Image (cartoon, rainbow, N blue to C red; front, side):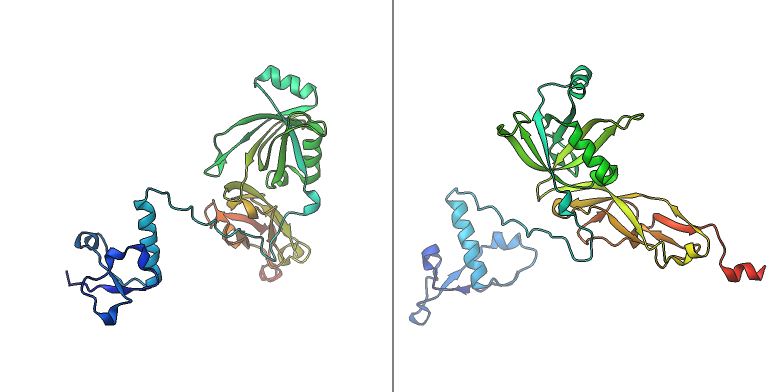
Length: 303
């Protein structure tokens, strides 16, 4: 290994470790001190490169903190993601606080009593790998409120929207608040015959969370679609697409543009226009829809 020369460190910080000053410094270098790296330390480095004065000061500060037995300060929070112009964002007029009360136990008999009293047995989880994790809390929500939201938004749109959940000691105003947290409705179980809400699963959604969500698709441009104007029809293959979404930018839906789709053409999942921070959880070449059922005019004439 080649011989390494010491490099100067600003004299503005000699109090960090005066013992690192070069023992043979002359008067012309009175305001300089030098940092040496041991041979053992250098062997562990893959690439050798000079440190700037500011970087060396940061290294020495970190070493002095560790030597004193103190923990390093936590890293700064990453910048918060925001919705971008041109992409769907939740309509604030649909913002609503979902009210809930704690539930002490579970079971079919307990759930039946809750529903009879106008409440929906529910659970709120911590998110883990985008799905339900630990820290489970049994709760009950108001049937009339959940039914109103589902009927107004639609089932798939309800499951792709974040809400504030407020768990109170009781539903009445002025009751103590047990927990207030932003959540994603993860699962919704409806009665097969009556569509009555049977239970709801919520997942806590802090800004740091990454959530696996089936985002609903909204098809637009059918009034000017060339293929549909020729008498063909739209074959819808997917109505939702699963993405891994940062909690702060969960899309309420994804626009699917049909305005340039002709007979025999299709749109793939890779063609969907979404926020760049969203991660597709399907193969990108999987089809979303296509136009089928009619030949183009020149094909008919050739026959």
